[in-house]
Image (cartoon, rainbow, N blue to C red; front, side, top):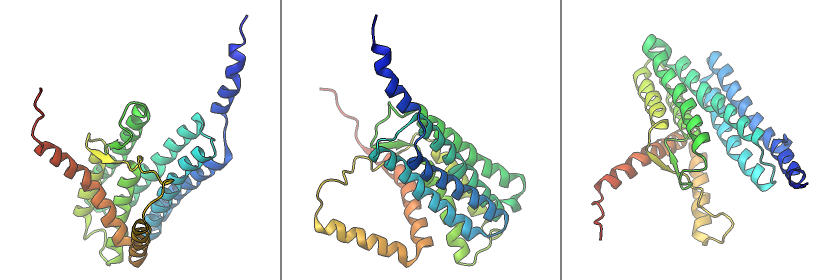
Length: 250
């Protein structure tokens, strides 16, 4: 008679438990995505765009809080994925549709659906490949970055007093680009290999402070350009790899 099953029981219970702290952040991200949808339906697109960025910040915190407090769970992972689908899939596509794509008729909702379906496929692929991919890179554009690209475009164009009708074709192009890039095989740097616990030179802290000052100077434009640059960085890296000469076998 063995006691092995009894040794596993506490670990199994831990994995299946529901922890409050990290799931509070996930719930906050879910609420921000829902709030963005409601505000888009009411025609308040600036509030909707900001809510998506808030969801992105909260989504980035829940996993880190779970790891720091050692409260990771299967429930939390599934809940986070469902929250991401709302906040970074449904919400951005509906915000963009209500702002600009509605005037394109069937082409408008088709473009919005490409983005929404791209998010679902991206999340499904991420969940199934999480243990086998290179942690340094994402396969396809991450859904939070795609959502920030779409929301940033709405935010910055609205800040320049452009209407959705005037920008409808550009909006469609951004939406389809983000949706297709999420399901592409293009690699994007994940920043997961950066060790924030080790010491850094003083210039790094100074540059970080300048970075936050730059964002605070004009949030819509800086954030949009930041995520546009990130969305293009994968293609730049892909082109550079194509230009490398093939390695000769010795």
